[in-house]
Length: 316
Image (cartoon, rainbow, N blue to C red; front, side, top):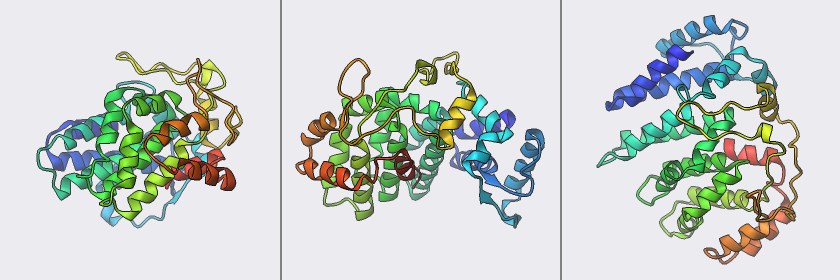
């Protein structure tokens, strides 16, 4: 698996768009091999690596039927556990490489349709990577990565890119109060609400912004123990969790959260760095006039009150 990651990273770092596309496809093939089940699901990780390469090379002729694995299966999968282990180190972290690719693609002076397609593919893979490896979300506690996502919400970008960037933003902020504080400090609320209120914004993008605002207004809670909190990335590594990988895997299979979320929001600003719905309502009210209606609707329907609802929005 590390050999395939090295090959894909080399392609992503190239300035040639065809090699960039090839690198993205290689990562997509790796994630598909992990998340999709087929007749070779019980092979060892080494055999599955070689099989994955053959699938990538003969993708057009592959008639094998594949289906998504259940999250409980994914947790026990040897390939997933190897992928997760590699992601804990800076060298093999896919999310950082995808962010570098986004920076390169967005830096092109005259983006073409082909460039926008590559940006969309990169965002889709980034969202999936952040869901598979939650620790990678700590990247977005820094200003540069968060600014990159906010730049993608600019009116000059296609609506498909804007919509996908909003989904990645939700995933980046999921259970990450530090990331949310970074988002707020960079006037992220102004960026999102301006997109929502603009007459030129497509209807599907406005729906995504509304979903994001519902998500943002949910109360926050700090992680229950220091052992389960992700460590910030460093040059030598990302800081391995003190808890076991099984603890993180439990989060992926939908285990009950260690804290209870309530719509009334008992948490408030303080040393924990979290904010209640009321506190975030005041911040959002600076840019949007009908925040009270959003909070009332959130309280009445409780669509996003459960963690499963939030994951559904992030994976939509």
